[in-house]
Image (tube, rainbow, N blue to C red; front, top):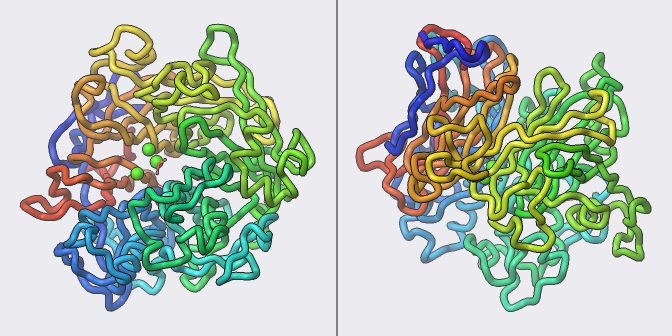
Length: 580
Ligand code: FEO
Ligand code: CA
Ligand code: CA
Ligand code: CA
C-alpha cells in the first residue's frame, strides 16, 4: 500500500523522482496499464492496428483516433461505462508510411478520420482491470466529417453560411478537440482549439479577423485544402467561422447529432468547466489557449431543473458571455477582478465598433473581449472548480510574448516576462456566487526551476528541487479535493528545464499548497486527459504524442514498435482510492 506522508492528510503517496525513460511510471503501490492506443479498432469490422502507415481512411474511421486528449467516464453500471475521448490531432510522421510527403485524397480523409472524438464502452472484468469492448453498440467515431448542428445566437448568421450549407446551421465535423467538459444532464462537451491550422488560402492576404484567429494563407502542415475545398478559404471564406466552438454530444445515443453551442463564443477553446451556482444558473468557465488571449465565463439564461434532466438539454443554447479583467494590488500577486459582459449594444460592442449583432460578438469573441478591456493572459489552459464550489483554478501554461508585446504587460496574474514555466491562478467569486461579476484572485502556484534560478524564475515557495515542472496544462479535482496537474512542457531536461525530465502528473493539496509528483510519462509525450471512475479507485490518464518529431520512443509496446498515443488506467494494488 502507499506510504502516507506526515505533511499532508490529503496526499498519501510517495512522491516520484523525475524520469527520462520511455515508461509511464506511478508510485509504489500503484499499477498503470494501457487501455487503448491510437489505431485500436472500436467499431465492428474495423481492422486491427497496422503500424506500417498504409491503412486506409476506412480503417482509421473504425479505429480509436490519434492524440488522445480530454475525456470523461460515463457510468452505465458499477462495472461498465462509456468513455468519451477527444482525439486532438495527428502526426503525419507516424500516420503515413510516406510521412506526409505524397498526400493523396484518401490520406486527407484518413487524417480527418484520425481527428474528432471516440466513444467506446469499457468494462471492469473479473481481473479487476478495465478493458475496452470492441463490439459494443454504443461505440462511435465522430470525425472531421461528422454532420453537426450549429445552435444558439450565431446559428444561421450570414457569416456561417457556405456554398455547401446555405442554412448556416449544418456543419461537418470537429477537429483539434483539446479538452472537454461534462454537463449535469449527462452529455459530453468537446472543445475545438487550434482549428485555424487546418485552413489555407494560397497567396491571399488575411484580414484583421483572420489574423486575430491565427488563420494563415500559406503555412499549413495538414494540407487538407489540397483535396477538400472546404478548407480553402479562397473558396469558402466562412468555413473557419464554423469551428472554434464547444460541441455538446450525447454519448448514450450513437445516432444523436452533435451540437455546436455558439453561445459559448468562438476562440481556441481549451476546456469547459461547469458548475451550478446556488441560484440555479449554470456557469461555464472557458480558457482561450493563446498567448495574450483571455479567460471567459458563460452564465445560462435559464435555471437548472434538478427534477427533470431532459428539461436542461438546451441550457447551453442561451445565456451571457463574459471575459475576465484581473486588477492587481500594487506589487502583490493577488487582487480583485471583474467579469465584463460581451453583449451586443453594451460595453462598446456596437455597430460603430464593428459588431453588427450578437452573432458577430460570438463569432469574433476575441475581438469583443479586447473592446471591453479583458486582461491578456499567459495562455489559459484547463479550468477546474473545487468540489466545495467556492474556488476556481486555471493553468496559465507559459507565454514567451509576456513583456515583449505591448498588449501583454508584466503584471497581475501574469507576473513574469518571457514566461517559460507557467503558473496556476485561483479566484473566488464574490459571496461564493458564480454568477457574480466580482471576484478576488491570487496565484496558487508559480512554476519555476529553483536549481537553475534564484530569482522569481525559481518559482513560488511550494516549488522545490523535488517537485519542479514546467507548463501546467491539464487540471482537475477528484471528489476529495486533490488537485491533479498534468504537464505539456519542455522535456529537454537541459538549461532552464534541467532536472525536470519528461512530462508528468502532479498532485497538490489546495489548502497547504504542497505539490507531489505522482506519475511520469514516456519520451516526448505530453500528459493530458483525466477522468475517474465514480468510486475514485480507477484513474484514466492520457499519454499524448510519445515519440513526436521522431523522438526515440516505442511506447507503449516497446521493442522497435511505433509510438502510439495511449490511455492509461491507474489503480492501487490494494484497491484503494487514488492519491489517498
Ligand atoms: Fe491542446 Fe491548449 O492544449
Ligand atoms: Ca492542453
Ligand atoms: Ca499545452
Ligand atoms: Ca497537445
